[in-house]
Amino acid sequence: MSNKEYKVGEVIPLGYQAPGKESGLIIIAEIYLPSLEKDIINFPDVTLLEVGSSGTYRESFVPNDSGTWQVITHKDDGSGQVVKNYSVGVHNVHSVGEAIADVVSDITDMDAKIIAIDTKVSALETPPMAF
Image (cartoon, rainbow, N blue to C red; front, top):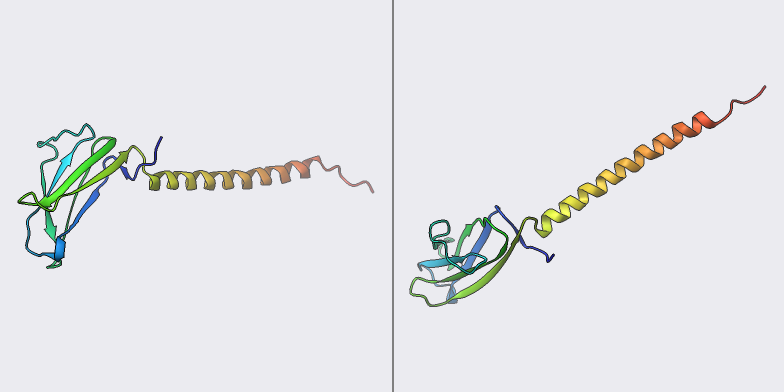
């Protein structure tokens, strides 16, 4: 299983920096399913919004399936194309790390409980002192 950058059902941010920081453009993102097909009903082309007058454009989409999603971002005339792949899975690297941290915490709690039980058992096994 390879590492996944993104998780099914979670937002994937899209970005585009226009050449020369050109402002006022219409920037389109075409979203392709892992099958490399377009689903214009569920994933129509997205128009990115400019951040101020910076020539930086942003938007997002939410994948509904595992696999490699491809997004082709470009100016409305088709020029300035940028192709990016997004690796999507049931778990992403971040969520796996959180799950491991939870398991480590559970093990630490169990160790503390075992030590407490061992201490109580040892106390019960110690014979009373004779006078």
